[in-house]
Image (cartoon, rainbow, N blue to C red; front, side, top):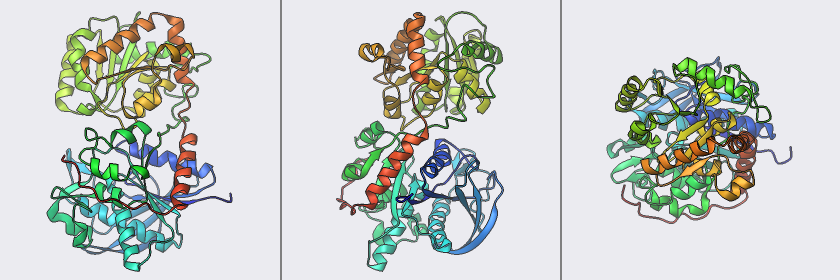
Amino acid sequence: MADALRILFAVSEVAPFSKTGGLADVAGALPRALATLGHDVRIVTPRYRSFDGTVERVTSVRVRTARGDVTATIGRTSLPGSAVPVYTVEDDRGWFDRDGLYQAGARDFPDNLDRFAFFSRAALDLVAALDWTPDIIHCHDWQTALIPVYLKARRRGNGSDAGPPRTVLTIHNLGYQGAFPGEQFSATGLDGDQFTPEGLEFYGQVNLLKGGLLAADLLTTVSPTYAREIQTESASHGLHGVLTARRSDLIGIINGIDTDAWNPETDPALAARFSAADPSGKAVCREDLLRRVGLPAGPGPVVAMITRLAEQKGVDLVIELLPELVTLNLRLVILGTGNPSYEAELRRWSVKAPDRLATVLQFDDALAHRVAAGADVFVMPSRYEPCGLSQMYAMRYGAVPVCHETGGLADTVVDVRPRWTREGRATGFLFRPCDADALIRALQLALAVYRDPPAWRRIMAAGMRSDFGWARSAVEYANAYRRVLTRGRAPIRAAEPAPP
């Protein structure tokens, strides 16, 4: 391939080796899709204690840190089902030899700044050790946001800003910024002149993501709508000034999903297989789900949520509506874990209305597939959602989403409006504002359409036929990489950050 690119993914978690959320799914899927296009893609990631995979030792490098030189042991494996190399980084300080990736007992590790400053430096030192220069280093979230900062500092020290690698930084969730007390700035190993409002300083704290947003050559996030939203004060988590200053270098690309793992025609977890052309097996999956969660069979839709039980996800809105929901002709299935007060309230209502609500307070991947396959309606009332994957899984499995019109939900769900319904494009129900009144109105509209089986089947089939694979997204990323390689850096205008 004449225009093949060399791309290094620097990322703090990669499925199936390590995972806390959707970042790992992206890191495990997008490199595969890029490799399929003919690009030379490699991944570097920490080797945590829980790292699930066999690793061959390659080399070791001495990494200079603010705590002294640290030996990084480099291992190598590959993404399952591909030839994409995965380089792992271990350290001799035990920074990654812990049970959790970022925290233990719901509390962040106090030395996370040391841990990921080391990993960011190790990723750059790895490039030199491999004698392989990437065109692009693709960084992800705050954990690797120091890489563009370090690379820019090295170039400044060398007196040149020419040549590869260029850096791309993807914001998966702006709510997590890698903020640390100002007195920890020395752990970055950077000169003190970087701890200013034009650098990593943010209201007295060290903000790693802010530093990366200022230093990276190109910024991406995981949906076009989220890219626009985070430039507003209300959704920027305080970084409005930085993001508006870089607006010409910020693009949104929708995440894909693993269409092999999430395929109702082949999924081994399902009681029956089905497709958009022949959805009859979905009725079998519906009855299987009700039996598994202890809800009675019968008429009326099955409404489901698969979610982290957090305020961001709008779980409180559903709890607020439970007195009304349990009186409607539906069964509600909620799968997830999170806020203990939400768990307690859902547990209480499951006891109070055992024929209407089933709550499974755990993460169970196989059950998640069965919930998507057995549900008729899938609810996602997230206050904000950078991209979201669950709504795409749901549509692929014939569950019609009811979502707050935000971020990636707005970009992936086509609302049931007259024109789009007539054209056969409608795939779900969007609502705003994000409150209980708007949510119940959208649910009631969905229930009304559900009572018209032909109309419901058209909406369901349109969702199942939607293309949510990674191929399209990989092409967009490759185009973005080429964009940054074929132009000079736009000047960064200094901007005073908006108050948090």
